Image (cartoon, rainbow, N blue to C red; front, side, top):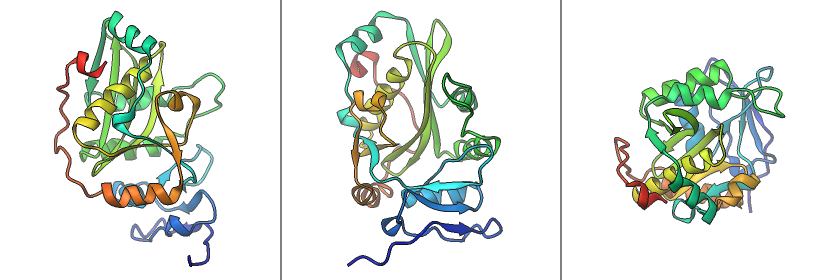
Length: 239
């Protein structure tokens, strides 16, 4: 029998070691409120299947949704039209070259959205994670201009996707396929998409229970992966 379900807890901003509750016993997707955005705190959260997500006027909020959106790298779906488009234009893809630029492009205003959850504090925190070797980004360029991309955090053999953007059709899809192909080659087991959207579902993402996600996390988070990310798969092996 499981322990009694717990409500979100208030984390101390003065104590970086103030623990998160076990999301396995959480009564909702919201796990905790408060704390700080230090790299150690965020990595601690990821290790428990928790991530920060909040608006500019909100306190720091920590989430572990049930169900959880995930994508298996070797199951990414490439439609016939995407394959055709990917081979017909002068696309370029870069890895880990301009993390700050990708972060800012993901934070830029979008149609139908009133603001961004990539606040100044979040931006600073993820730049620190990138500098420490935990954060990674993909840039998609067309005619030399960045038109799409994504960023996230790797922990063991699991990639926690945080955000993506696209300025032209298919740019974010190309970024995701390119990422998935390389992660599959490096024996990553899962891409965490947090939530399932129609866009991600069309790429092969699915929903699993929080319990199932946490079981995957235990198996994957300590597996060895490349110390330095380097792109090497030729375009024809990606698409």
